[in-house]
Amino acid sequence: MVQEVGGNVLVHCFAGISRSPTLVIGYVMDRLHLSSEEAFRYVKSKRAVVAPNFNFLGQLLEYDQYLKTRLKTNLHKVHTAPATSAPLEFSWEITTSSPKQSPSSATPGPKFYLRSPSLAKSPNLG
Image (cartoon, rainbow, N blue to C red; front, side, top):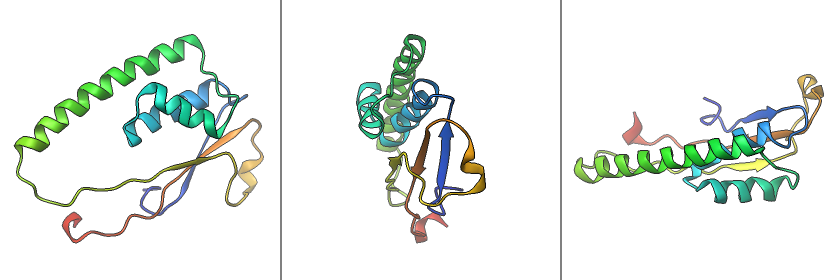
């Protein structure tokens, strides 16, 4: 729903170094189809202090393998199924500044905002 209206999502933890960046990295891996290393570099380029702990890095590597397996399975399904609609395109931006401050933005710690442009309604999507 947030994606459809071009909204933002606040992701934060106490220090913004390990927990919230791990969640954002996983999200970026899934949405942008990046490896764990590529997604880590992307998020780190937006917030230099990103440093998920050893266990979180291991979980991201496991998630990377899961996503690769899922992608292979889905590609097989796409290649064997008839084309019924135009592909969807997604574009995401990660920033550490909010486009507008709200009273709830007083929570401590760094924040990540995931922003997506509004999706145009396609006649094939109903």
